[in-house]
Length: 311
Length: 311
Image (tube, rainbow over all chains, first blue to last red):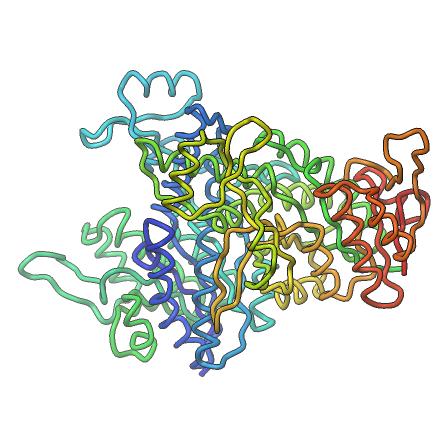
């Protein structure tokens, strides 16, 4: 049976340098193309934490140096990361498809994700980005640029930005048109370029949208059958790392909510994945979410492994 | 009459900093949306000289600094520039459309342009990119990285890369699908990310593809009616800046070839524009190319100004 599947790739699917990324995307492409070869429609989302961090750090370092390049706002750094990652990822998938004599177009769409400017997250920025500063430098940045700076685990001061919830995908018509015409689409890279609506404008805002939530949003919009969140582990566990650790093959949204409340899942790690999976499974009857590792995606779809989250 | 029009935007349509770009794209959007409002299908290409230069300089400065970010190859910098420019440009066009109550989707496609690895240009790199170096530093870069370094008009040494001819657009099916479904598409940004074919792979190469030639290529592929090259002047001139200067309203490809041979047009400036226009006008009966300024695009289409190049 042919399913429409949104696959959210974790940080381990990419890499920290362009050279590393060029290698890693080759492995990433294989299970993705397995899904395509089995007749599924695949839409790809991916994180960009290390990549946008690197770009932001480079741009701010250079703007404070003799090079004197202009200061680059954070959303623009996100847009750059989509171009950079999309370039490598689309080529790796394209090559793997051609190696299997499959002529399927692959496209990266520069994608903006709309957030609510009144999202409470803006009152409490938590996501550290960019370079480390001394306390003195941090105070200057706070005063001169209005950044929120926090002390980061004894390693120095860093800027933090908000992590608001995605409410819409600005380029949804583009993604939808391409998917309906048989393209493999790479979208909402890094959770999307964060923007707010102001009248007819979309305005970039310094924020980090969780890529699992953005993937869930585009999966809903595209009326996908499956949301697959790929991460470093094969299954979701409760009591992770403890004696009574238990790996889960199936999880209802009700059970999942209970485990979330009980604190089984690490914030910023497994928690947003489980929450995104729950939201998707609850959004419409029949929708399923799967959390597994990149290597096990195909077996997961076949019901052999992974954690399947259903309503 | 509804025409399919590829519009190539010059450097003056964008800007050197993100702030400048955000302002300039608003002006750029107006004549583009005029064309769309008059029923034309519009595909947008743009240069990226100052932008990719800035990104490349920032990335290399940061990688040689304490920040220690990884070295970023030139094609990857080009991919970043497409995300960065597309983000601003698509939003300005989207907003101008909505201000006129037009609900037309606008999309930026990360686009690779294929060049021939045996293109003679690779034997004679001419396009300076990135920072200035001392002669000593230049020799080290030449030896350690295999860069071609040249002395640049007394200002220091710079890396030069080749400017090969575009032979194909890797994402042509994506662009075509979107255009056929009524999307305004931003593509071949900066002349496209330069790649060569190796078996089933596309490999990024350090090169600068002229955005006028890349625009001509995608216009041919899409079977466009018009190629409009927007630049700083309203018309093409012969004997430019001399007493017998003459502005041209019409130009046959034969006349244009003669003027090119006579050296009327500056290399790297008006010459590639005239050459791209000639190539398009010659590629199929009925195809027309127009060279004019951003502000005069609409009047140019109406035949009131600009230089129209026909077979």
